[in-house]
Image (tube, rainbow, N blue to C red; front, side, top):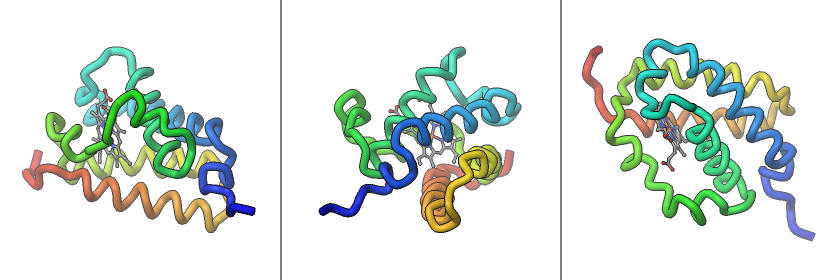
Length: 128
Ligand code: HEM
């Protein structure tokens, strides 16, 4: 029998939907991050992010089927992602991860990935 994917281990789609919903609830009220999002409705952005994370962790590949290759650094190029934006993003993500109440080992695996990905997404080192 195959080892279940991380996606399955943590509870599948509902877990990733909750993660992203909690995260975007924080973004919605963030004076630094909210203006970066081009759409008034954060729902579509939340959907893209949830589908990406589900695919990354071994769930359905709906993200690439609808959006193509992720190329996330390229897709973030239009947005200013400096150290302050990264840290704000990680602050909301930390609360969102905590809200899941995952076992410590899975929580660490998820968090380590998100923290590294957030540093990788920085595209300017300018001060505000
Ligand atoms: C899209 C900001 C980090 C995954 C976006 C968008 C913004 C943004 C403004 C456009 C919203 C939209 O989809 O319409 C940021 C900021 C970050 C950050 C400020 C701070 C470090 C990350 C990280 C990941 C990620 C670490 C992955 C782990 C995505 C995905 C999309 C997206 C999948 C949608 C791409 C698409 O299909 O168009 N982000 N992001 N972001 N972001 Fe981020």
